[in-house]
Length: 320
Ligand SMILES: NC(=O)c1ccc[n+]([C@@H]2O[C@H](COP(=O)([O-])OP(=O)(O)OC[C@H]3O[C@@H](n4cnc5c(N)ncnc54)[C@H](O)[C@@H]3O)[C@@H](O)[C@H]2O)c1
Image 1 (cartoon, rainbow, N blue to C red):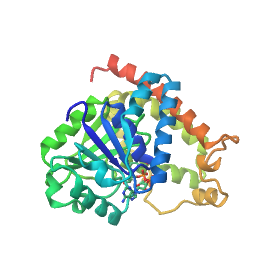
Image 2: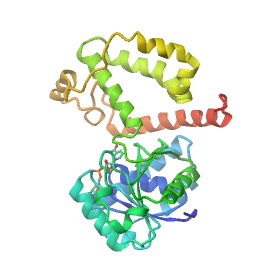
Image 3: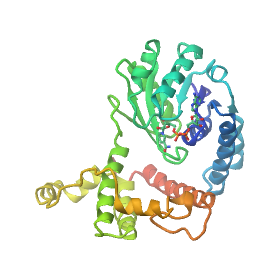
């Protein structure tokens, strides 16, 4: 796929609008489509404000913001949006009948050679995709906000041509992203599985009253996360020494929690109307700050942190 590939985003929701931004920032011509014209408008507004935040954080220049915006065209009808696409990225609701219908509409209107990439979180979408498209489809699963978080999981279907995987890996590497390639669809990929395992431990620690929300987040921020950002988990284990890992496993005196399907601590917060940043409080209080302000501050913090991590990666102090 060349530098000026034509990319279409089907779905302009939370992930769709942000993925339109990502592909346009990568230099591609992007059409963004949604069944809701209102959402299409909202999506364009969100792209503009995300780009402004990136300018404020020093991640891009005002000229780069303008150039990225100029490459994005909202298109209301799916058939018009995919008619000349080299790559169609599907980011509609996580619902089997809706995705099946959308893949059928893409099949009817997209060029035969187009690659179809689904951003599904948990669905094995391959049985939903028409037979004639099986060789040129894959899952490309992102993390929010994808214009800051570079990881993208690439998973082939049973009939996906390996060259399609190669092409998508090269495309995203070329855009400065970090594709991770799987042999097949695995529910949760790696990052979401690790996050889910951590979520079980966190819930248990809170529900049992063994650690406060602050103690848990401090342990992550000042302990785990800094080392993980530099080394991941397995290189960190190499530095600790694998003998320690072996002894740690042998000496483990508790069983990791099994999913219970609910948490008293979480249920209590929800009953109090503390649903997180969107409602002004969750595990923590946010002192009356608006969600917009909080998301903007989060994004600026993440962009600054990422700039430093990127610098360290270029220096490659560990040589791996
Ligand atoms: N939210 C996340 O953090 C996240 C992360 C990774 C992957 N995903 C995946 O991305 C996909 C989209 O999730 P989201 O969070 O952006 O959802 P969302 O609800 O914010 O957006 C989905 C959009 O799809 C649109 N849509 C529905 N039917 C359509 C149709 N027939 N044609 C065109 N557009 C249609 C809706 O109007 C809506 O704007 C899902 O598969 C989800 O699993 C989400």
